[in-house]
Figure 1 (tube, protein in one colour):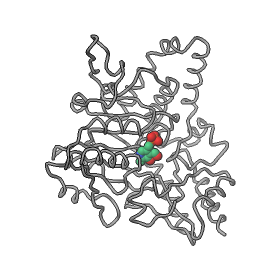
Figure 2 (spheres, rainbow, N blue to C red):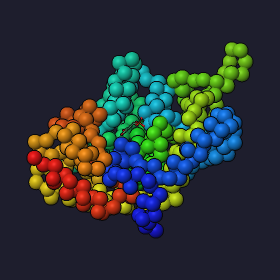
Figure 3 (cartoon, protein in one colour):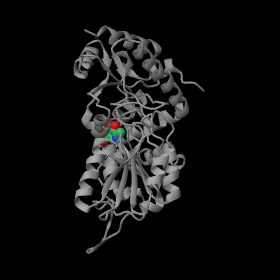
Figure 4 (spheres, protein in one colour):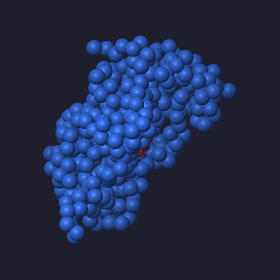
Length: 392
Ligand SMILES: Cc1ncc(COP(=O)(O)O)c(C=O)c1O
């Protein structure tokens, strides 16, 4: 079934105000998400925070089922967090590294992850190695295969980077990781919500993502998936009495599910919003979402490519719905400011957010336009005209 664009736009109040091409920054929330959060906050104000949580206990508990359904996982393998970075950190810092252990990553790795590699490397003597790309700038699974030995402790890669439409071959990496018995941590932050994201197909042991981007949930939400067998062996880097109930004066007992990575206090309104966003995406269907995102982003690339003085920076043969470009002789900040003035939301990706890739390709700060299924052809065309008119 194809997506009913008129309907999803009717359910998205933000489309009345802006042409939103910043879903890689933060997607526009659908009414279902907004209503769930506002309704819950109203109840907190009316009857009290603990009482509202108790009233909505079933729905709050259901958020774990929704995220598990999205990922094809079990609910006990899911922890809810305040963003993707915290989810990633909780898992990564739970692993122990010895001098000489190898961390294999990708050139497109996100800055938050890479600085954590650097810190752990400095603390433990583990070494970071970048898996080579193929001629198209996509992670090369064959090169990865050649790198695996007993010292490889983890393969930790970003599936879709923050700075463009590259789609790394996550499932091929997962197949190698499984076969060679290496832990595979996948940053799916920019992928989740714009394409199917099923952990069994990806072969990952750990997956992290955010709620606010292509999933269209609220800001300040994220989640962590950890495969059950691995999770049961992991000692979270910090715990509280929710993660590990205090059972006798000198003993605690870690929870037997992924919520050993959580703490007691939470933003329940945001959690409900996340759950609704996941349900909304599942109802539309991730395959159909991906198809429409591909059509719109291809159209956008095509339109921009036809303009003189525009350089598209996206890598790979099958790019996703993040279109990164620069305008000759104009810096990204000026271009973005002009587009904002004209009613278009885009963002900028600075070299420091993907430093290895930006350095290798001599990338400046790039403008990032990221359409979603609720954008229209007319919006894409008018955006291309706006970029054309923004030239000096
Ligand atoms: C690839 C990637 N990973 C991780 C993150 C971090 O997500 P969050 O801001 O929810 O912590 C981002 C955010 O832009 C990202 O693009």
